[in-house]
Image (cartoon, rainbow, N blue to C red; front, top):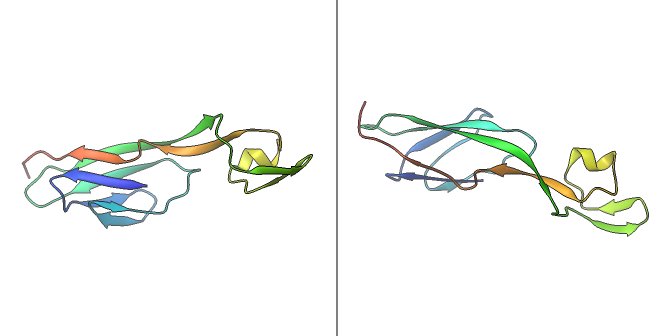
Length: 102
């Protein structure tokens, strides 16, 4: 997951815990949406909601035999091995323009 801000150098903290300074990237689970809060001295803070959604038509694995798939990353695929979908976080990258302020 990538994070960008104008101006650069903002601290982005996710509601999942991890944080970084923009521009930056974090490895986050695609199964959980979260809120990203951007802060920088001299600017008003800003928030962006990130959703975990299904992406139909994108495969996470390869069927190596009927009912057996390799490389699954979606929890629901375990109960439906024929499913051809995956989860992704949107928006990605997360972008924000911070306004001068407090």
